[in-house]
Every structure is written in structure tokens, then in C-alpha cells.
Image 1 (cartoon, one colour):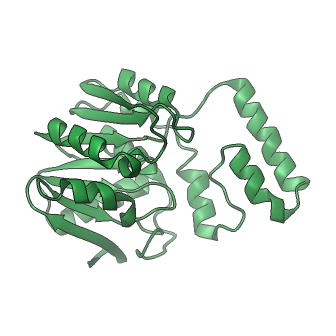
Image 2 (spheres, rainbow, N blue to C red; image 1 turned 30 degrees about the horizontal axis):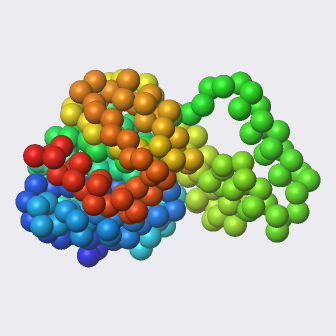
Amino acid sequence: MQVVVNDTLVNYTDTGSGPILLCVHGWMHDVSSYAQLTEQLKADFRIISLDLPNFGASQMTDKVETVEEYAHFLQAFVNKLGLKDYSLVGHSMGCQIGIYGVGNGILSPDKLVLISAAGIRSHRKSYKKALKYASVALRNFVPKKYKKKFYKMIGSDYNPDFSKVHKAIISKVLSADIQADAKKINIPTLIINGNADHETPLWMAETLNREISHSTLEIIKNGDHWIHQKHADVVANSIRIFIS
């Protein structure tokens, strides 16, 4: 399905029936990220997943590049579809957008589900210094053909082959810290994280659990960053219980 929101063409899926789950994907992903979870939940819920602008089959635009812009766009999408009562489900960057939107009163879901949530930035000086030196080395001394491997080694989501828009997004969205926004959330929130997640480590989920009142943390043993795909049955059951 497609719909025009704020002059931007948006690709989305809408399946199932029941209470509405609005699903927001993570960095460099799209609606397919929720395929396994949708199969598990479509008998009990109406599941709406969208490709955010600049991702998947949605339109590329330089009008939506920051966390705030994405939150406002998501609310415009909600208004366009006429959604009144819904729960917001995010994965990784999708959580970051959701936390900012809910925390700042832009989005108003009934409940919030955060899967492998991104957006808590490390403030450890040694860690930040190491990344700074690594970035300088990559930029100045490493041949381009090796840069992808090195960025992956240091845990960066950056890719030198990204488009101009994606480079702008990664600098504006993925660098944003939403810990202060999380403190302002007062709706029921379910936080799900794997204990083997290296992209968004467990300490990030634990931090969100401390910051968000009325939140519950569920840890999936041996789960990595893609728990909503590899452990879809477990995640789905947790969501089913939480929403009901």
C-alpha cells in the first residue's frame, strides 16, 4: 500500500484485525523487518508497518533527516490513516524515534514497545576518544576498499557508500541521545532486549528501564539485535500479554 504524507510517498503494510500495532523499523531496514512478528500476531492485532522516508520503498527526501522530523512525520502518518487508539512498536532506530516522539508529546500511543532500542549514547571518555581516533584513521589512512570492514569492526553503522541523505541521517539521528526524553514518558512501556546484543547492548535497555516509569524489561537469553525475527514467537507472546 502507498499513501502521500506531507508530499512524501510512503510505502506501508496493513494486515490483521484487532488492537492496532504501529511498527517502526530500524536503521537501513524496512517493513520486511517485521515479517516474522506480523505472522505471529496478525490473528490478534491489526499490524501497520511503514517504510520511513528515505528507507525501503518510501520516497527519498531531504525534508526528514532528524529524530524530531521523523517523529512529526510519524504523527502525520497516524493522522493520515485516521488512527485513534494504537500501540507503537519500534526496533532499534524506530525506538529512538518513538521515545523522542512520546517523550516530547508529538506521538500519543496507548502503549510503547521497545525492541533492541537505540539512542542511549555512551558518555565514557575513553570509549568516545577511541572512536574519535578510529574515525580519523579511517578517513585519512585507510584505503576506501577496506573502510567498510573497519567501520563494522568498531561497531559503526556508517558506510562510505551511503547516499548523501543517509550520511546526513546517520549524523543527525544515530548520534542523538534520547535518554532525557525517556524520562518524560509516562505510558506503559515494554522493553525487550537480547543479552547477546552487540549493536544495542543490554546496558542500554537497563538504562531505559530505569529512566521510563511504568516500564518493564524482558531479557531474551542468547538473543542478538534481531530478536523480533529470530525469536519472533517469544517476542510476540510478550507483546500479546503486554497489550492485553
